Length: 111
DNA sequence: GTGCTGACTGCAG
DNA sequence: ACTGCAGCCAGCA
Image (cartoon, rainbow, N blue to C red):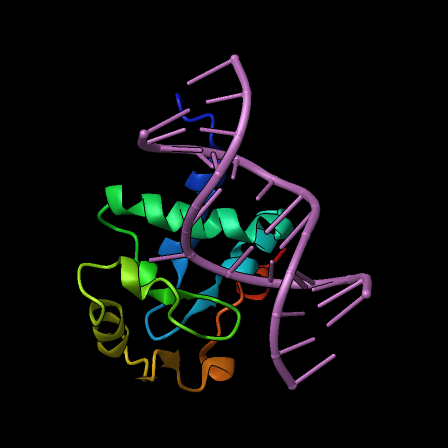
């Protein structure tokens, strides 16, 4: 493998595993990868995820359930639309019942 | 080759 | 309760 950067790769793997109708946070993914302090890098990985077609980046939001990365999509409403298609209700750039549909890889994927 | 910035988060003041 | 700063990795000027 020529991919030295396993971090980005792992991030994509986890994001792909996010079930439809569920969302997770950058911090949760970072923590699952064993780099809780690199949550910011996870967000940056999503930015680079644009080069990959099968990355549901709309299912990744910040710890407040806010769609901080919506501005990076094709349109500002694209992320919200995708979430709605997943069955996730978004209001005012914020995931409704975020606490309830939150998908934690640490718990779901087990340690 | 060096330095800055960025889709974040937690702790300190 | 609010604001500010440091840590992490990768891409770009």
